[in-house]
Length: 227
Length: 294
Ligand SMILES: Nc1ncnc2c1ncn2[C@@H]1O[C@H](COP(=O)(O)OP(=O)(O)O)[C@@H](O)[C@H]1O
Ligand SMILES: [Mg+2]
Image (tube, each protein chain N blue to C red):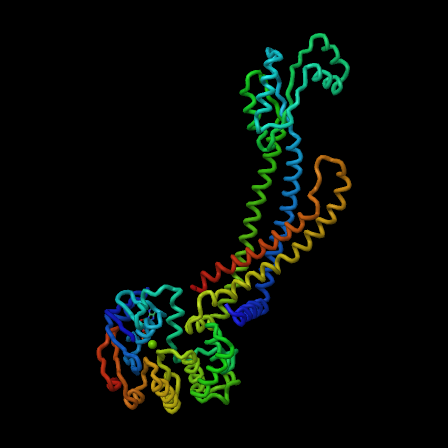
């Protein structure tokens, strides 16, 4: 599903964030991306949904050459990928329901479809009761659930999460991981950058460790490997 | 684009206008001032143009015939003039008729010349297209038996020069104003874009198309342009109607007349509205391109 060939990324300021990455991720996999801060995890992830383009090398999403994608083709790619961030990125003036519906409105879904799909994901993340509440009335874990709901409401094939539990306490983190597990169980591929050792060592999946822009370890069912 | 989307775009664009009132007011005012000046200038130029055309149409070319020309030669010259499609209203006036005109115009003293008439035969002609007057006059100078060609005695050139200078100065001024207004609009839109940065980021993240992101801002610019055009349209219409009613009766029977109220005022209003829309759309387009990167 995702294939990277000799991917090299140098930012305008001269920092090399990817220094020859080769990887193959298959449909349905759950992949942790681990490594110290500044290792290049976020860069790796951003090149998949074309937030960044590689300076050299190729990134493929199925048969799409992501790096070569024309500006006007990007929306098509983005509609197949859901993205979740550490800081949730919810719109403060919209309530839970509206925040999720927003993702469908702006890709011009019909109102009936929107209603159906939003209610479905609300149930999946367990927020049906809080649909009318606003982000500032929710706990961090609940906000992250809204953000996850938004990322999957368009039924993407791939969900990318950049440190989704980074701002959450351990207990809440487990709840969030439960949701990702459920999503993965439905066949959705998941790529998650994380610093959460407990999670990686408990819910075993493929682990890719990046350091200095290079993959130093790629192990199915591997452990976190850092202190 | 479905109707839900369209409604959404309109709603978003109206919301922004209500949100940053101060800049909205500044942009609308800039468009208003610009369009008032543009409107006044256009009214002046279009009326001057009409007067000039009226005058131009009345400019005669006077072809003095060579003294050596006999009747056959005069006939030949007449034929040449008549065969030239750039000329019209060809009239012959003999030297005796010319003298009569002199006497009528300057007094009986000129009657002395009846013995030895020093004047020449003359052809009076007009250029089919008044703009061609000078060119066609030069052409006639080349004809056999055309001794001298006179036209408007420099009046035509002067008129054209004044009109052209006026037009150029006005156009430069208007372009400068239009740019100022566009700049202000593009700043207003920039503020909207910054205010909605997070929203735009998420829109792009979930796969909204570039045009979907862009349209509300372009619409907002267009509203600013239209709102800015309203006052100039009303003011100029009222002013022109009043001025016309005041001036027109005084010019009854004169060669030149102001442009009638209609269709002129409709055309002018249409033009002002279009310029307003253009300023708004373009101003916001520049901002969108620069700050939205879509
Ligand atoms: N937009 C950017 N411009 C310049 N340098 C960047 C940018 N994004 C990240 N970097 C740099 O690239 C390196 C890798 O960053 P990142 O991929 O965010 O690492 P991680 O997510 O593993 O912490 C860091 O040194 C970071 O400072
Ligand atoms: Mg990171």
